[in-house]
Length: 274
View 1: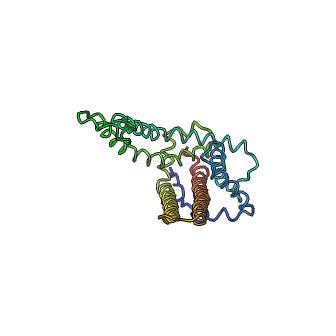
View 2 (view 1 turned 45 degrees about the vertical axis):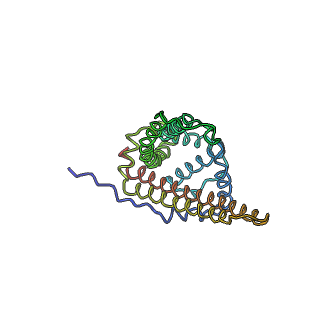
View 3 (view 1 turned 90 degrees about the horizontal axis):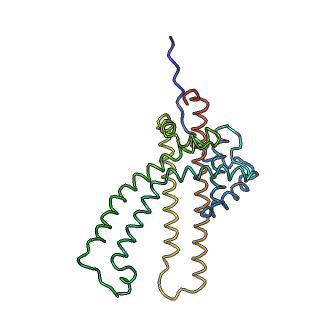
């Protein structure tokens, strides 16, 4: 009896993930709309549109469409897909958010047990016999230590959950099937880890550059700054916000393309395994 042939080795095409966008003749218009939504993604609807747009991008890459960058023609579909991505984010990041809320609550409890705002006014003194505030601060330490690995784990798992949305036409249930999510990671461990690390490193460089830019724009301290200089500094800060938003969107498209590549490999080569 012949042994089954192992699937061929897969390597992510990072060059294609970086360059695909500029091969689309309509990329300036498509990216301008995506960047506009991305800049306002702190509000709900633009966030859903961007999330649905990136999910559609991954689906088109999986299908090997020659121009995978989606058009902004069906906003209703983008919103529906974005809503599913949002639910996945809420579920997988819920432990992180709950622990963060607990830490905020403990800090506030310690603050008010010490006298609250009256501490800043100098109208109260810290009770020397009460150990409650110090116990509250002591509880924050293990929560903070737990928050770090949970945050890292969520950031590492969520792309695999997104991949399940791509592989199953946006169905939510497969994205919460932890066995399938971890099996996807395990089967593609080397390339998946490389994708996550590369995206995290690029995002770190971006955030570092943005911080340096804001420090530069705010580094002209001292008195007597005239109005022209203030306007100049504000413009510099706005430019950094705009550039950071555009580059951040580009990095998310880069990650969405790589997720689409992994999903193509899962569907076309490993389709018999899931």
